[in-house]
Length: 175
Image (cartoon, rainbow, N blue to C red; front, side, top):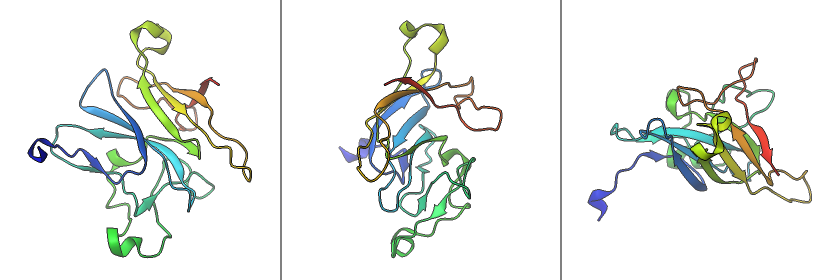
């Protein structure tokens, strides 16, 4: 029954898949598909399970986009949709704790349809890495996106590895 339900996270939109980190099952990784209007990024979040806190990722009050003003780290911006703040509360940096900010963006309209950590059979090169299947978009008014599997190398702390400028690594694996 409902008494057995343990809410771990809220403030997510259109989640297709989740994956527990094999190194520490207290961490749950969540692929979230952003909104179309306004267009926001498809993201990867991490929530901690079993700490009695409900992690709030901020949706619909907080939205995330990578752009000239936003970049990394991904900072929340208030939703421009009329009435959202009144119904769900205002978005502000104080309301969104660091753990609950997105770990990375996959981009817009890629539609992350599945995520999984590499099994040991993938070999040492990919051990512990996260893979995401992007369904993609064929919107005739924008360039095609997605339609691939991407690899996210994960470090010993369970966070995406970053390149020299601090941007998380998301590399094309198969298409």
